[in-house]
Image (tube, rainbow, N blue to C red):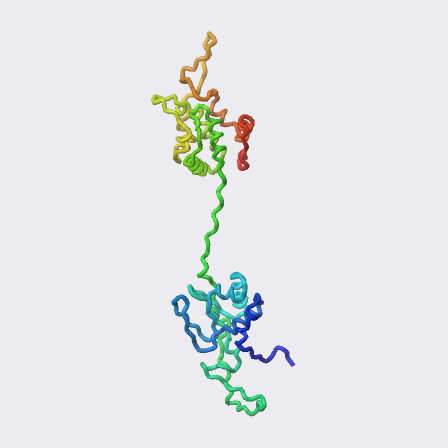
Length: 326
């Protein structure tokens, strides 16, 4: 005798037992639960959030989150279980903004000879009556179901759960205190900054992001500003650049980097015969003890050398994100 033939009856009253929903559902329990929940009448209508939902025979219509709570499984696990049932041809699944509609394929075959025509059932003879007395004409053959290949199985969707965009990469931290110390070290001839206000910190972060968080670019901007006699105040207006001007907008630091304020003629020193040093092309420089070093020489200094100098002179520290370019 084949042990896998025949049918058993399972009362839907089992759904009311307290222990039925007491544990996580196995794959087998998920399938049995769908069979128990499937609509056995021709059609049923109910409302969710004021929206009419019509369920046909052999269908289960529930929000995916409700199924997840019922089976005591994560939503992704529920999706995986349903995909397995779709793959082996047991169900088709379609989701909308209200419910996930699960259709039991070959539902009538699962139900044997009962409920084949709307709500009309076929009476089963009493147990003490031989089966042979039932006239063959009374046996109603199950309706022919379409082949599984002919059924359009839609991939499970979850419109009620928003798809989040990919997280943006986290921006590097900007050490505003270090930027200020680098400015004071590389631009001794420009005005000092006494306090880093919140507005100044915001400007630093924005400008440094424009520089692609490159400390070498920042140092080059400071070096070229210090090497420019115009920016140090050697102009007919007596104007001097300062920290706020460099970081004020997205063009000032770029014009410095592009060389707009570079000296047109190299700075030269003339040593007269009387032994005194003259520099006819440069006005006296105050406020920082400027050392007449050419811009090209200063730009060749690596950032690590600069940071080491600050470390030794001011007792500071080197940000972990700083390094020389290869």
